[in-house]
Image 1 (cartoon, rainbow, N blue to C red):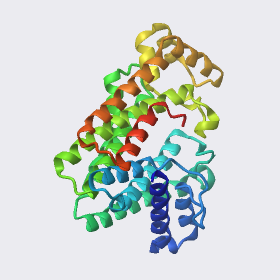
Image 2 (cartoon, rainbow, N blue to C red):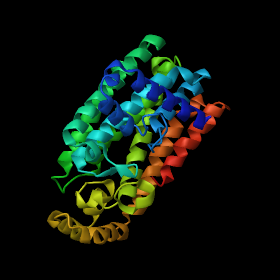
Image 3 (spheres, one colour):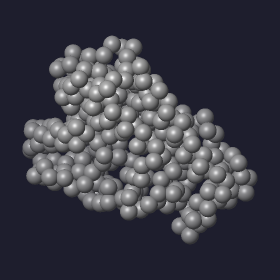
Image 4 (cartoon, rainbow, N blue to C red):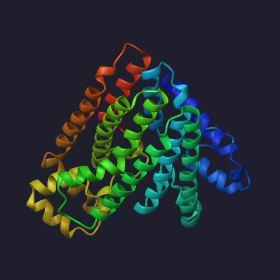
Length: 328
């Protein structure tokens, strides 16, 4: 069923982009958006993300209602919005690659990529508005509220690069916007599509937000100790860009020696392994794994009252649990 949901999500996204009147009028713009979402122009897959947000959305809907199809359009909207953030994130981070291929801005140029990202966000909102008409719920409002938190989180993440005195509480506040809000929204929209009441939708949103924190912590772990072949992007970029990941925050608050070196660091690639080793010696790798497990378990505990012996429930539980030790 998991693969079926992914395939139907891909079909929904592809049809939405191919049928759009504006994109039909400009071959290059349509090609760019398809590329950003991992499609060739004929609909075959180049490569792409894991479609986690549509999966969370559809599985939540299925868990509540017994059917995942009502959430497909919301899931497509979330995936387009997520990839819009990746297009802009690669520009902001000056990242050359995404999913083992050139980032959109690297392939088509900076101005066109910025514009294509904006178009992708607009299409995501349009898809959510259409989904609202079908469901009779107000998922678009949830997406707009979530977007505000997402932009705030990304703003803080960028601003943190200029600082070396980040506390864990500040880090978590940033993550709640940058990563957690979107995953929480995926669970919420799935609940709304499944016709859940507001109280149930709020519980699923909270579960998604806790999972989002775990997801970002795992990202931080992989950004230091991951494998290039698995990730499809540089594993040294976080250190070279002086990203205040949880690994850095933890080590800087524990080791004055690390903090002094970190303050003086100028992005020299030759020092990446030294910083990674210092973080390992400080216990940062173990700490991040523990925190990732903690937030994952909180997500599972939050929705345990809705558990039932269904395929949707089992797949969702397995998917949530698998993120704590994912390789990419």
